Every structure is written in structure tokens, then in C-alpha cells.
Image (cartoon, rainbow, N blue to C red):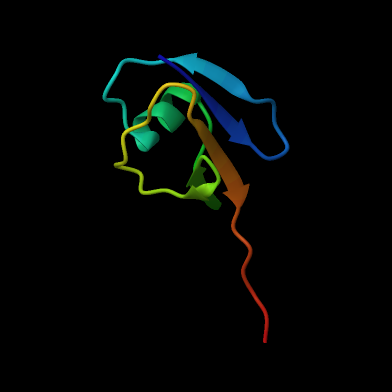
Length: 68
């Protein structure tokens, strides 16, 4: 099945992955690092152990911290 992995500031990667693949496994297959990034699945916060489905989009967005 095909999914997309997007990392802000880098090209998106379309992967052909086996059924039952988790979000974490798909990110690892993409070659992107997760350090310092929040993970979203189809625009919603995602658990790394969630299973991806056909045509899902995994996004890696830089974590924003700070404030008063």
C-alpha cells in the first residue's frame, strides 16, 4: 500500500509499505529523523504505534516550545 511521509523543509516521500506497518516503521523506512519533530497522521496527532492505511499522510512538524 502507498503512504506519504512529509517533513517540513524537505521533499515528501511516497512509500510502498506492507499492510500492518506502524507510523514509526513508515517514518524509519522514509529515512527521515524524528528528533525534534511532532508526528501527525492525516493532520491529527499520532501515536507511533498506530497502523497506517492506504493513502495516509504522515507529517513531521518541528516542535515549538517556549513562551511565558
